[in-house]
Length: 363
Figure 1 (tube, rainbow, N blue to C red):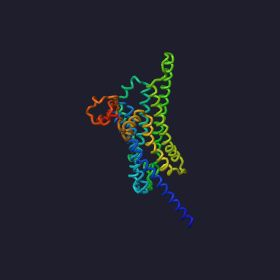
Figure 2 (cartoon, rainbow, N blue to C red):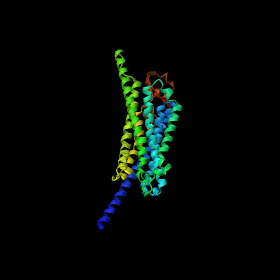
Figure 3 (cartoon, rainbow, N blue to C red):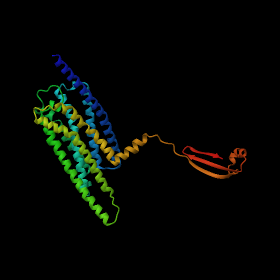
């Protein structure tokens, strides 16, 4: 009996320790994710005023979706700190889960739009401006958020997807049935991921063919082997590839483990899904702004010029030195006292010119 009590006590302590660790992780994410994405949103808002680039609008939407994920991390941190006191009710648990899943879906679909935008820019450069006009961009973003909100809130809309025997532990498998995970995985995640990979592969193939043609043409004409616009296409495609890889590595384990748990009744992976893998997926909202900040030249340049440089201390500007040699006593008669004291008929006059005026010295 004593051994059983010790085991239960050790289990409770381990659970409290894990809850404290996840609470600390959620607190860190709830600070870093909003800060990083707000910074990207501010920079992109400034850049859009100077250059109406449609790609910036999609990146801005991605940052907004990731910002919402970061705000929901605050709720996750509070839930960990207060040991799930907010989740005793099924409705509030589903509401929190739906508000967390919705921006994740929005982030995923935004990556799809970014890949489609890159594909159209490379595949049909002459018609790109006509296709991706402001009206088309606005409609696509509206459809994106309507679809994200609808799919994210299906458990609240459809009672048949809710668990009847809710135990007070808030998690996707605890509050919603496995059918909802099938919807998220096979209707949203996998189709979007496959489409993104196909579009990105097509972009890489087209960009490579164009690059080879340009190299061949420049080799025939004995021209320098460089092309800035094509290099920008490669850099943009590389950035999208990095984002896709990070997204797959962040959310892929969560969905794969979720499908295994849904199909295997004897498996006990629910706690792994609720804690470790879900935190890994949320961390993707921190990686996106970091990747775009260091990969996008315009964002990196604006960050350096307008934020980093302003925090550095402004050094006093140098004084211009104008020196006149062998100036006679008559030329500087206003300094007659100094001339009489020195007793030298030939003197050197130095004039220092700065922002605050000028000063004069003789030798």
